[in-house]
Length: 159
Image: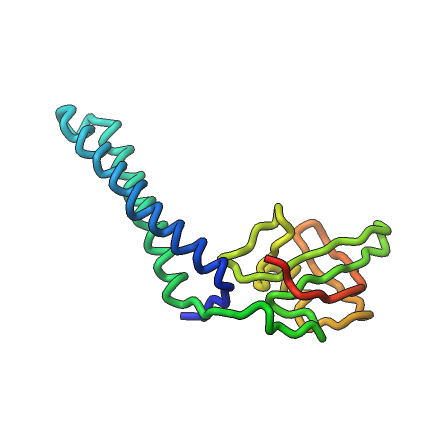
């Protein structure tokens, strides 16, 4: 099992999410399944089959969260060095082709949220940035092609 590096805030979020799935969503679906079971012949009961499939999906989500938490390694983001791009650093880059700057925070897969600029260190962009230093130009293959960015600044992460 590969370690999942995660911050205290990320760990707390995952624990809260697991409790929500275990203590709220799963019991509600079990009740819904029992109600559907009471509606007669199970072979022709679409509500029952849908509830059963949803319960399987919920159990898979719970299992996934448990695996992530079991493999979690707590990281103190305040002790992360900023001499190069690494997990739990923010990096500001310049795209010479588009003449724009972008900023990314490299986090664990469990904490990734691209909408917030938090990308997984395992993503193509994350892998392309890891190990770079200020002034380096990196060429990264992304689904839409290739990008070339110059590293402008490496900062401590702000979670």
